Length: 550
Ligand SMILES: O=P(O)(O)OC[C@H]1O[C@H](O)[C@H](O)[C@@H](O)[C@@H]1O
Image (cartoon, rainbow, N blue to C red; front, side, top):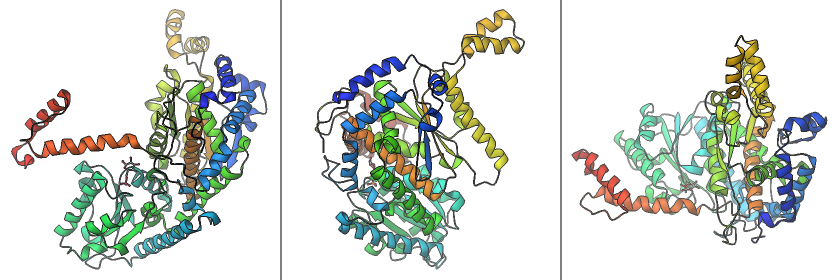
């Protein structure tokens, strides 16, 4: 591992700085006009996806320099480290082997791969028993509903995949409960019947407060419906590395599927953590999902830097972040079934690359992972796109566009596609004040009013963005898309010199949460927190009805 890497000390970085100063004054549309081949050349394809980066603020020279930067950072070697099981998670002394979960076989990692294959088989059996109605509840009724209880990586991936693949959905309905707010579980259970409901307790650690709290309430709900302790085994499965804690909770070993410490939570949808997806869409579709990701893994491993899609996306991320100063990145899927994609990518990218020290613990004096946000088009157009077009913040964006629809409503889908392409073009071109004034005059405004209004209608354009398209959103292209972002995240972590696979920053809040809970549970305890926290604790205590404080 090159733990001493510092992005700003790589030889090409100084040249990129000069290029950024120069390019900031140029309009992207000029590149497209002058260079007729750019619209085709600034694209790459892999695993059923096409990336169009022709509307980024880079010219051919900058692109060459970015490729050079990737070579100087030894990105291809670092990618081999990831794929071959090197200890890329240095603070936790582990490899990060999510790619093994969708591999067809790997000689060097045969022991681990055997476990993966055995677990896949157990997932298949479990999913098929449920789908075929063989898995029955305590009154011998077939299970109709599955509730995945998990949070973070044990929720966001499975939830996204199940929702995105709704056209492939079979008869079992999968629901997702994550929040410790009792309303989340309560709302979900409202429409469910205990006799036909199965819970999957999804927790890599089996120590997560939200998941354990919700699972206990779910167990009480089952008991209240008449399920005995031995009946519960028909209604609870667990996915975890911590089999002991799961059995202590009352889920017998034969109802547990394993996870491994070499799979990070946010990279785990490919493991048994994805069981709810396999139940929702069936085993064949889940396998297609794994195969799509596997195809992207092979592309990452084999494609040269110049045509490597995850590497290119990562270089553009670093260019926009470090050289053009963009502190955020919007993801705009033009497909309602990908409405959860920004949520999933927030954990993937911000938990991975929201870091301020290098692998060797040294402080970094350049920015790392940007804030990621977004929502499905066209909803965002009627809300935050105003800022994308005219705000003072530079927001690079990825449009994600399946070219066809599963709905069968092709005429209406055309409108969605037209909106996506129009937003992309408007971000590229903008509108000058003179153009705005001309348009106002043609609409009957008088000279004085048109002059006054024109600056409000003018848009700078030149907003860099990518378009990631695919023929249609299938299990395979969805797998490829998620793997693409996983690999972009890893490549960027290499360039920034940070560990993408730990998340120490989430721990302190959990510790303080446990301390504060003891103060909320026992009103007689004096609170010795900071004055602001003490005041809020007192306010909470005053707000409680007497029966809530027992
Ligand atoms: O799967 P679990 O062990 O319950 O963890 C669930 C989540 O909680 C943690 O706080 C981490 O920040 C996440 O990376 C993880 O996915």
